[in-house]
Amino acid sequence: MVHADEVPPDELPVITKQVATRLRRLAGKKVVPSNARITLGDSFQVWTLPAEKIASISPRSSPDLGKLGNWNNRWYHIIKVNRRAVAFFRSTTKRAEYSLFYQPKVARIEKFLKEQKKAGKNLKIRLLRVADYHMVALWTIDEDSQANQLLVIDAPANFNLGGQILTAMEFLKALRSQQPITGIRSGSEPSLHSKRSR
Figure 1 (spheres, rainbow, N blue to C red):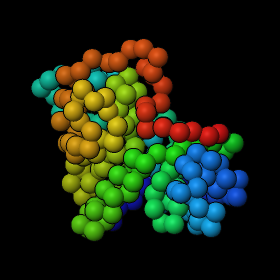
Figure 2: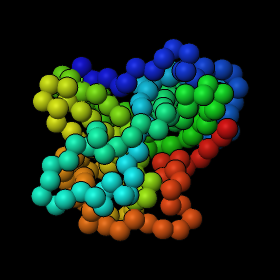
Figure 3: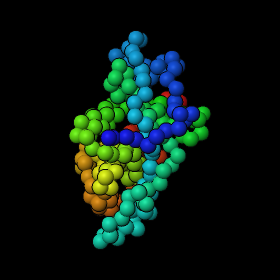
């Protein structure tokens, strides 16, 4: 069974006509036609991994990614248009704070989840943001073996990691081989957020 962390019902975003209008404005009428059926897909806790935690890892250690990362009280909720994943909500535990994003890379997440479900794996799914390295990964935890894997959704081109599936050790090693990225985007949301509406 593949599942994300359970979202309290009162924290789920509500799909309204206003949401449909905003999404159509972001993605265009071709992606969101006027008669489109818009529904919620899977939801994920958003975890963050600070640069200082990465720097503290010993090359010979086998760190627990779950102890290095932190849940930042945010959720990502996949938005489907006619059963196809095209966007997501980002919400916080404060119900009034929502942002809507159109992002074609969400389809990559949906495809990966379908493959894992078909394989019958018992996985917990989270989204991991490493803002200081401008990286976003889908983080899977096998609830039988406790093995961790990460599907890199977004990363700088020079990292050569986009689309790769890595173990937790490989992921952390790849980060340790790079320097944190400073500048205007450092510490902000990675570029998974291509088009945004509040």
